[in-house]
Image (cartoon, rainbow, N blue to C red):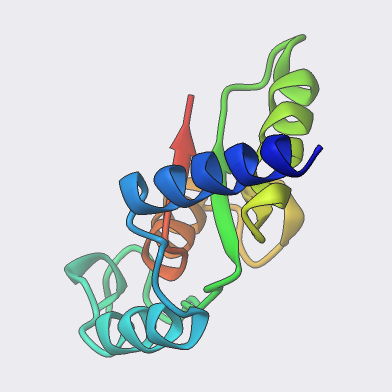
Length: 118
């Protein structure tokens, strides 16, 4: 049992390294916050997404997926996998800021340390 736990820990560590989320959560949060200080052209004054909030979600990952019959299965699978790594998902349908889907997607990509785009 102990050997199995060690193997699972090693795999988890490797996955975090490959996804570049193997740093302390505060460092990830600081990096996201610093990057959000530089507003992209999409969020500039009078641009398409002007005035839309961009927030930092260092403990989340963004899931962008098409609306089809396997959508919930994929999200549930990702949830189970990333929960082990200490992350939970966030999706455009989780928040109702705007009807501009492109703005929501861009805000979540910029505000999370990683994304799954399907």
